[in-house]
Length: 192
Image 1 (cartoon, rainbow, N blue to C red):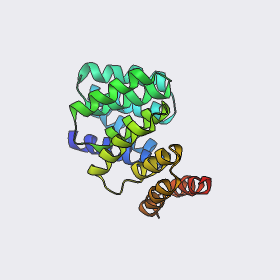
Image 2: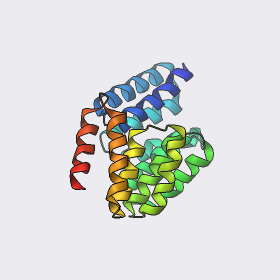
Image 3: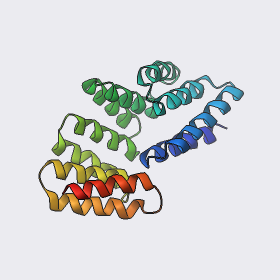
């Protein structure tokens, strides 16, 4: 049962990276239901936080992530998701420390590098963000979110030719998997 719940955590992350919010919501609710039925408090807190993150209730999600982190202080996904909630709440400095903790706890997961890079783009630190997006690509070379993010950085660094290369790669990688992602990438290409 634990393996199934761990797999759900990765599936939610993948769904969110492709803007499949309904799918992510369904997976988070499924995880929450299993955790409640099996009386697994850590997973109950974690999946409740996921439901709230998807609903953009970041302060409430932080409450449940803190409960999850009391159960498992080094849980990389909880640390990462707390970083996301803090960044969405405008607490970028604190968010960056949580992404660092997630990376330290599980350095083999590209999504954590992606999210730290995203937080750095919120600070408009595009050059530094690029390093984290490239690192994320080491784990998943055709990750649409990372390819798009690199393009976004180059666009903001006034390097439209490089931006176009990465936007086109992102568009190719997401074809047939996410209509919303395709629309966002097409809009980005039109800005160049």
